[in-house]
Length: 208
View (cartoon, rainbow, N blue to C red):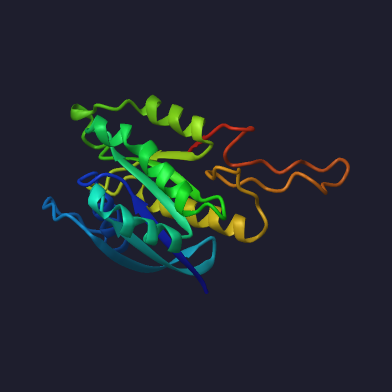
């Protein structure tokens, strides 16, 4: 059975805990209790194969940055989460990405950019196009979710597990991480070249 450790990074109150709880327990609570570190576990089926997923929910506050580096080093896949209702959380995504790259300097990290709280469109401060553009710039994949309604939560983790399996089976990651790509060499004449989920040389992909 596959076992995967996924680490959630992002500012406080963006919904990292709610995403983990919605995926593992199919529930949502309005109460906000700042996290230092917590872990949520679920056994699920992805493409006909059972896997065990552990989601590590990390503190967004800067005073826990040293601890966060430790959690990142132990992670295999990452979700970088911001709230579409809080522009500062989006602007801080580069800070979390740089922390991720530093902590995983020996191996490019696999990560997905996540815009949470998409059910609160009336309070939107970050356009979907802005998230797509940032993912394009980073060469990673992008999805908007709602931990409240469950929209795209299952899809996020299933897609992440598929990408982790691709890397395990030989797919490459760009030097600065992001979305995996299958090796381009060794294809037979007349055979189709495998597509990269992240698109072209840099590009990103919107999970739909």
